[in-house]
Image (cartoon, rainbow, N blue to C red; front, top):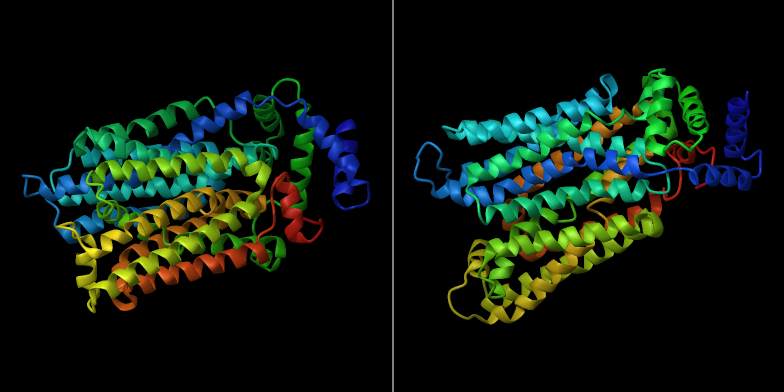
Length: 501
């Protein structure tokens, strides 16, 4: 009876029939009894998935130069094959996003996460044992498939476990572990050949499967399956022995009952479904249209123009910048809020990509180069001093500002917001659409980037990216709600129009 009255009081307060101060004091009283140790432990276990994902993304950078020079003609990559070796991961990841959306609804968040470690290990095993180029391709597709599942499941798993005080920080750890994985594989690539690098890359997914054996399923998934006792046990593990988990359980259960258990076609007319879906899709499109892949493509060239000859070490420095500022974003996420960081990120990237465009424009003007291909050869040349080396500081500064800005906002936040805004009954399907959009855009931009350079020139391409960064800033102001400090159920109510932001 006590549980029922607490549940009724909570819902009445959310509907505005009671003083919301009472609701907040009730929430604060509950959260004051919560212990986060096991929550942090479960988060650490789950983010071994994004670390594996980072190893997959970063693997091609140190491996491709070796594979293009390898003595064995069966494994030697030409330029086209090397391009596919790098980009085919995105194809596997797009399929993995769809597969992950199906898996999380059928077998749950925990088992999906455990099973996705298998294609990681099988993929890297194929690469280790490769006898021809096709084995390398299949290995990359399998690791890409696992990356797609991971990029969907882990944000959901963390957002459904975490309470509102720490959800932003823990959700940002997804991107932090991705960039840590990328930097880790860059560092390992300084000392290991491509086969040993693949062996090292299979360690995080192996640890993921082992650690997740000891972690609970998310309470929200268990309640959606009608397993209240298991949900209370999971909450007791995550919140500590002193928290009255029946209160939180009742709150989540009511939200599940109000929504209904299954997705219907008519739900697409519900603003609580289509509004967050549109926001999620555009977040993923804008993330890829910031120009992050283009900047990373030019990183080595920019360092060379600044007389930084150790390009491998330069990649590690770029990775380090990403790690440091993604960690900063994680630490301040629940204080600054999502919208503020997205705005700072969008503006800084718009300024830096505009400066990049100016850099390439001035280089072309100094040399009177009409052919874009010739310009690129000239920019990448390091033989002897040239006038545009005086401009290297502009490119270096632009790259540093861009990577910092991306790491603070548009790197981690789209994945975090994706995991927060969808109602429970469409969370798997809607997240799958967002992940598919992200990886499809990554593939399209990667494969068409050189054509954009040829048709728009280098300066024009980067100015296009700057325009997209301005557009994403406007989009942030106009459409993205602030989710800081709100429960997942309160965020759903914002989109349904039954509660203010």
